[in-house]
Amino acid sequence: MTFTPRTPRVVAARRLQRRRDRDRTGRFLAEGPQAVRSALAAGVVLELFGTDAALTRHGDLALQAPVVSPVTDEGLAALAETVQPQGLVAVCEQVDVPLAEALAKQPRLVAIVAEIRDPGNAGTVLRTADAAGAAAVVFAGDAVDPYNGKCVRSSAGSLFNVDVVRAPLTVAADLRAAGLLVLATTGYGDADLDELLDDGSLASPTAWLFGSEAHGLPDDVLKAADKRVRVPIYGGAESLNLGAAAAVCLYASARAQRSPRRPS
Amino acid sequence: MTFTPRTPRVVAARRLQRRRDRDRTGRFLAEGPQAVRSALAAGVVLELFGTDAALTRHGDLALQAPVVSPVTDEGLAALAETVQPQGLVAVCEQVDVPLAEALAKQPRLVAIVAEIRDPGNAGTVLRTADAAGAAAVVFAGDAVDPYNGKCVRSSAGSLFNVDVVRAPLTVAADLRAAGLLVLATTGYGDADLDELLDDGSLASPTAWLFGSEAHGLPDDVLKAADKRVRVPIYGGAESLNLGAAAAVCLYASARAQRSPRRPS
Image (tube, rainbow over all chains, first blue to last red; front, top):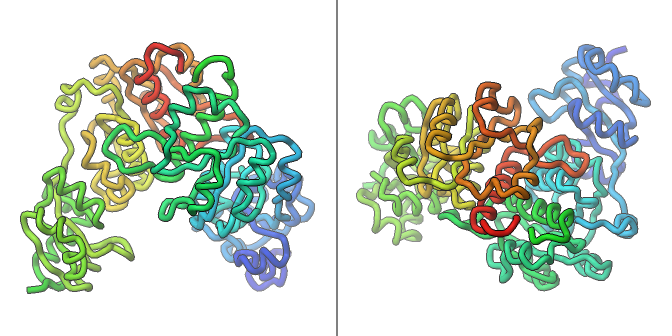
């Protein structure tokens, strides 16, 4: 039997496009073969919806899913949020873990997205943090839901690769107490990223705080950090966008932590 | 007199939302106070359209414009491509320069967006290149029009701060002939960015080649480069997005060029 947009299982899954239903059920949707592959590897897929064509093409994924539900093109379109969903949508269990669980692993690199409401930006930071080897990404304060469809897509599977934590803005103090150097990014920082690279500070276990592009970090969060850091601007630009700033900071840490004996 | 959407000057300016009319006239539109300020500083504004409220609020900008044309809210909405245009749209002369003119200044850092068709991505690379101190950004091959509205907005004024060049894909050979180290970014590169930082290569004048996220760089462009470079991936992510990869590479060069005597 092939499900349609009106099949109750499809109707129920579709509701997960809404935050309220994600929060209520502890589930969310992952769309497209790349995200589905990562979700399967993480063991969190509950049901895989796919068109016949997609289930044939991605037979390896269909074999790993606990429940496979064929859907019509219209059924798939109802579940998907993109124009070209590539035929697969998985219902997944949410993956976030308590802060204490993430800290117990003694992470050496953590990214905190603080009050970042743009899902594309948050997902991009998640992907970049994963690439740079961060062990955890904290969604702090009134940040976007990490299971928002656009955030999941922008993370390109990284949502399943790192410890995702949801915490209040006071998380910075918890990370300091756990021995991490807490660095807040701001265009008005008194410390320059190059100085921190020169003086060896970045070899320490570090948590980077990133705020929204429009509003930056709240004052009390800036004050709670060990240092307020600016990425140097060498040209006429006023600033970097959030994704670029996060990439420069997280990769500076990644390199410094792997080259502790030489200035980097 | 306040112009409406049907005023011929507004109708003519609005046509610049289309590439064909931009190409024909050598003009384009810059939207919002930040872009207008940069365009005025670059001396390329021909006419500034603004609502009464915006022209009052940004009186300093209105004073610098050679022609100021008040428009109704509807007239402004017709000229603007965003939902919140902040009341100002300027008609500007295109700013790109021939490659020879950019090379005559002996740039030490150049970014090349090769066949990148996504205007947001191209504009973001332009902004990041400017921030990292690049002197020129080359739109190569079948890349997006640098004067596409979304590209202009994503560049956040950087379009006016660097030498923008439009060139065929063979530009890589010209840059090598001019003495620049040409580095092509690819997930399959044989050189690792960290190796280039360690061996001091990045202190040289450098041109970075970036391809589209979907297709990467064409094979002949990869072959024409001095080296094919990958940004190291330390976690589970398959890759970085284009904006993040460009930020890491361009800032690696910026730092290496400013610290030539120590390994960085």
